[in-house]
Picture 1 (cartoon, rainbow over the protein chains, first blue to last red):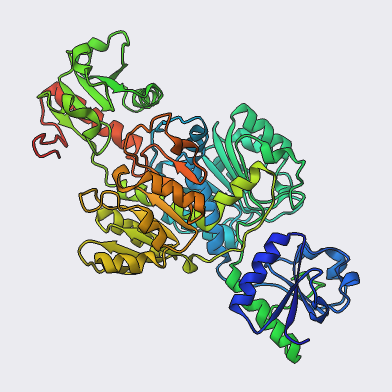
Picture 2 (spheres, rainbow over the protein chains, first blue to last red):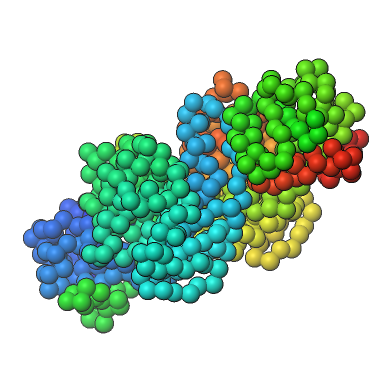
Length: 310
Length: 310
């Protein structure tokens, strides 16, 4: 049937919520969940970590659509299936990343982390307050996202340093590069935000040496990739007090396995890779438009070149 | 002894932290805690909820200094003692209020409240994401603080409505006044921020009728006064799901008594009246400068007129 879609994800709650919004916003599209009656009418699958053997069970699917900017969560099996693959392109993603990071910075700056711990024991304690301008916040990685976050935080009053492989110049951001530059930045950092790309050079960069180069009591926000972080070094630094806390959005294995000790590690906040989430309205509109295009045989928007990976 | 000060508060941890910073920033001042040896040399007391009989135990105190913008926490006994009373004046207080409120807005908008609940059960679940522009945030009270907060949130991308007794006009804020205006605002409010002054008209305004006028699942941030909120109505609204959560900074009795059920109420975050805290550096500099002035017999800065109360 034309204009029909299957929502394919390991996360049933997510697809149920997505379907409800989809039906309400774009009633011209028929939306099916996995195993739902009539699902064999759908020729487009909107995917979020779908099962690897999706096409074995749903051979009528002729087009794959990521509900995110990335497509790696589809897995090699689906990416190599020969079907067209589309992704979401959201110009508000930078804003979303700034929102996430700012919540984390404020969580440390305004002592919400300690205040919430105190609440469990009914402890009323006011911590001496620092002005934003007294806090040194550093951003590793000054690509599109890092640059936007660094300048947004600077506008909010924080002292911002930035570090990148090649030297850059940004308004209101003290920019450094190279290994010596990294140490200069770390030595004065109260809150460290990782937005580096993952490469052979940056794999494991968030390790004991790096944490020890920061003043005691530092705070880490990792929005890069799980591979940047040496988890056991983080735990050591938290347990010793070298780090006060960490807000982690990315992990070596996602979803983070239930058995992973990080879930219960004191001082760690685990979020499910949502830092620069695209908005639901954007997802629905872009997927729905592509479903209509696919039904009509028109060109798909934001189709990726599988060989290049983007 | 000249240039000496007593730190007087029920909160020993706060005064210990304040002393450490004081000594490091202004070594020319001798700083004493309650009961500490040499304390009888101090003639100025820096106060935060001090004991009512402070002057009976420390008769050498000749000047009282609040470590906050307000002086009501000194209590009538000390305010009527005839001693000069000074307060802190911090131009960054508006920024501090915006920081606090923005953390609360982001906590709801980016689902950190639900994500943190999920973490305790190791649940990895990504909620469908709204753009800031899809959220209706309303500010009750458009005085200096309310205006600043409303416009700061608007700049951050939220849809902002404001309500005040007399009608106002503000850039990027939909302004309403009067009882009819209040209902118009409430009917579309996802996140409600109270920054009203406390008066006979606004006492108990945050009640069941108001919560029910909001769409189900609303979020409350109370930075006004404890007297604005009818606590039992809040609990009812939270338990029924009419409200999703509340961030509360002010209470009828402060510190909030340990026996108060609000500490453990699901969906409530209790913070110890810190929303528009002045920064420690400002407190120390203004108190230290007044200690030096007092020792020299110079005019005190930001001394209040007790009869007028400011």
